[in-house]
Length: 269
Image 1 (spheres, rainbow, N blue to C red):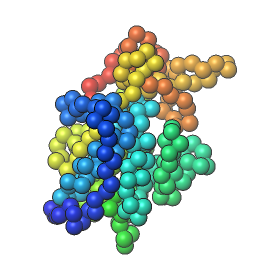
Image 2: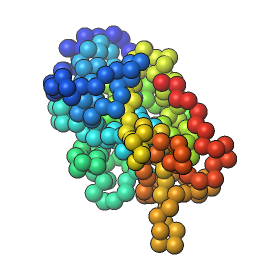
Image 3: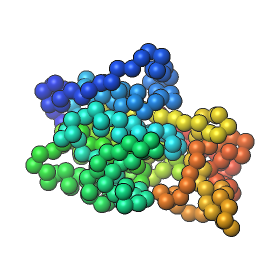
C-alpha cells in the first residue's frame, strides 16, 4: 500500500503553462473534448501538483493522430530533466531515429530509456533495480506492449507496481484497433480508472476527413501500387503501416469485410 504523503514534500511542482481563456476547451462529463496537446500537458501538471500520493493518468483516444505523443512531449518539456524517465515499446519503433526518442508528428521529441522490450514487466524490473528512481514515468504507445496482450490483468498490475514504488505515471495509448476492437488491454486500463481513485484519465480526439469526430483508425495498405483500405482478415495492427482517423460512418471505416458490420463496443470512460 502506498502511504499518503505531502505532494510538496515528495513531488516537486512542475511548471504550469497558463493559456488564454479562449484557448481552453470545455469539459463534458469530466472528459476534455478535442483539446490541444499543450492544454492536456497543463491539465496533467495540475492533477499531479495537487496529488498527495502517486497517481496514474491514462491519456487515451479512439484513434491515431489525436496528439497523445505531442502532449507527452509537451509535458516532458515542463518537467525537470532529471525528474522523469520515458519508455516506449520496441515494436513501435519505425526507424533508427525513433529508437532514442518519442517523436510526435510536429517534430517534438523526448529522449526515452534505451530498454528494448514489449513487456511492461521488464520496465517494472528495471525501475526496481534503480537506486535513484524518477518522480515521473512516461509511457507512450501503451497498447503495443504486446508481451502483456494475453494477460490483461498483468498489464494493470505492472502499472500499479510502478505507482507502488512511489512514482507518478502518465501512460498514453489508443482504445481501438483498425478493426474497431479493443486494443490489447486498453479496456482494462479504462476500467481501472473507474475503480481506482488514484487513476485519472484524459480522453483526446481528432476528426475524420469528413469533419465528424473520429472513432477508428483506418489501416491503409498498398495493393498493386495503390493505397487502399485493409481487410478485416489482413491481420495485426502494425506500427509500420499507414493509418488515418475515420468516423466509422457512411463508409468511413477502419477496414473492409468486418463480420459485425463495424459495430464497436462502447468505451467505459
